[in-house]
Image 1 (tube, rainbow, N blue to C red):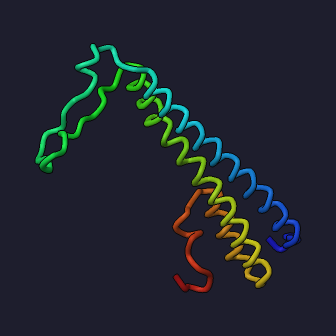
Image 2 (cartoon, one colour; image 1 turned 90 degrees about the vertical axis):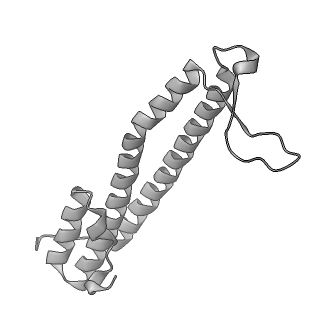
Length: 142
């Protein structure tokens, strides 16, 4: 590890690039979820109009109609299932990005402090996507 030669300004520049790309990914994922939600609502159902809504059970305030919930059609159900299956992949992407950023910051800071062992631990934690270790404050503070 004594062969490390980190340029903090270079790390900072790369983190800005990664942060910008992560923001674009978040925007794209939010747009995907919005578009799929709109598609599910527009897809309709495979039931006649009067059965397209389900009245929810429970107390109702005087003068108000009972709340209803739109019935889901097969397309909406499939889109919902697709998103629920992909959620773990989306979460994994977010965790890996966070681990990379936190690991780079922590390893660089430890390197600048002269603590190469802690820098290596930060690097290893980022590689293992160990967010708990990376979120800890340096020097034992939390």
